[in-house]
Length: 283
Length: 243
Image (cartoon, rainbow over all chains, first blue to last red; front, top):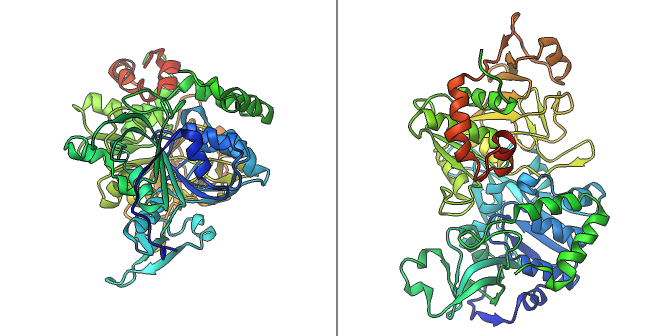
């Protein structure tokens, strides 16, 4: 891995979330942010509608509602993540069921090892060291984690994460601009996955004219167009998750999902109501 | 005798004592789904003029980080986090924690535990359910080990284990817990029967102090108002306060 140079993009403008879902092939290794960090939910729903198969999800560093939905819909073969949870709404029911019934492989991680692996790919180096982790059973299931002697000190072992290069980084942004830049604010883990991934697809709330990198106040929250393969407009595209400053997470909806998704039948009815029938999303 | 109080309030006051005053603790980080530890820190902050610093990982507005979700771990690696909290689907007598799987059941996963347990100066283990199912002789999976052999870098480790029934102190040199106190209404015999691992205990077991009227007044006033926006369901249930 890491032998193929990554592209310097000319950002494409696609029609909608469905067009982005069509760019993400079955079997792709897709990096996703946690529920609190700008999830491209409309693309997730479009992936379910196009019956995507065998996806491998990378949680950066954890996953929640969006992963539970994809897993329950049968789109996912494997998840690499530090956790899958619905937060205050409890366990992720379709994730737990799929693992307990042997239908989903989990590559268990711990948050900073995910960040380290992505940071290695960001820098174009094969691995990145981290403190801690040695002695955790996690290491016994990871042949991409090794211990390495500190080359500067005696008797000091560190764990290293092999570089992680996702096929796709997928997330939602508050704005895109005419130059192909997107604004992610303080959610810098999104920049990290965009830097590390072969392709980066972003939905956005609203288009800004001009170039946000020309604005000193906006620029620190911008992900430059060089990293962005394609964008598409998706108003309220993170719903029922939130976009801080625009709309909050729909707690009542997540609780309702957690309740319904406890059974396969309840989950199927949820999909029918909120995913398969496109117009179901409230404006 | 204090007025009547909720179990969560007793636990928050106990956590606040474990964290200690501002001379001992400058910075506490609190993870997802941890309203009681967050309440404890807000109680200290209400008493100590806004100290210690609280980094609430999943704060919905104005969270303390601007470098993304890796910043907490970088802060901990730098040694800037004094106290952190961990729980477990299972916790054993050597303070190992399991957040992954037990008895055929899958749990969310290890989160940052395999790093934070090493890098934070002190970790308070916290799990409300106190049963032989949770407190086991040996965890089925070690998400993060309670101690590390010589030669393995480790800045910090467990300070104590607090449950819904009791408080244990961690004895690093013996790699064993020692019972500090049982909560009001719990007997030492009841505790032994509900704990799957062996632990040291004094001949006369103390009772965990109840919240004082002053503590309850702070909890139900300024603390509740700080907690409600980030833990709305918890605050609504405990204090009938809306975010």
